[in-house]
Image (cartoon, rainbow, N blue to C red; front, top):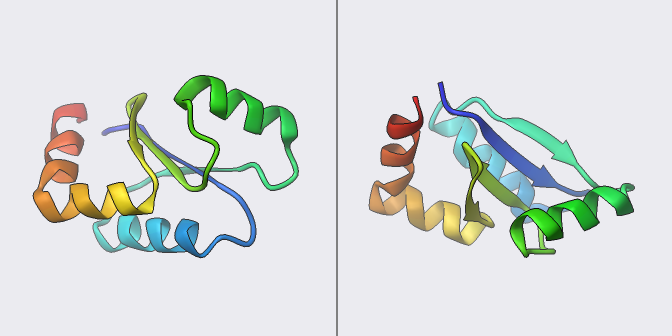
Length: 86
């Protein structure tokens, strides 16, 4: 099983949409909420170079935010990444 992490904040409609897409596909994920965690946000920027939410990682590989996740799902890349990581 792949390790999927969703970095999110509150309120965040794109975070909700990313989690809903993963839920719809039956993908288990760990959510890390950084709403009140400035140090965690700094670590996310160091890790991914991104400071927007959500940020989705599959086995340490950055997928990106909701737009990128949706595109990966539509193209079949999400399914492929999950299969490779399993």
